[in-house]
Image (cartoon, rainbow, N blue to C red; front, side, top):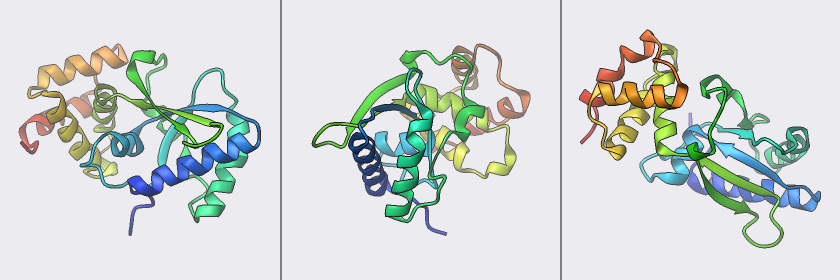
Length: 188
């Protein structure tokens, strides 16, 4: 099965979402995580099934839903192409330092959407957290390996420290047992 988004299609969806919000006189900020954030930051991540995002504090999440639905219809996407299921992998209090400002959409005209991307360090911590769920396949492991290599992290202790710095607790045993695979089996 083909993935719903490559980089071009993701940018197209964000453009349409921003344009729809702008046409409605709205402005929303989104924090983007997962495959979407990886694709917008790294050429090695080629696709994703959906866009994991959370409306940032101070912005109206309910106002976003009609625009998300219109973009899904216009582009032939699943209704949940943009979803906040990522919440199970985020810490309760997210520091702004975990994000970098990314883009305004539409690029031309009055923006209706601003995106913030989870930083590579934050994405790695989230991927480490996701390693406890063995039923998610190997994509999280491959992403964690690539992120660790990008960040120059090559030992388990550094992964443990990174996880603790983001989540303010030790990683679950089910996840930390797979940390060795992140640094030992990573492509160099």
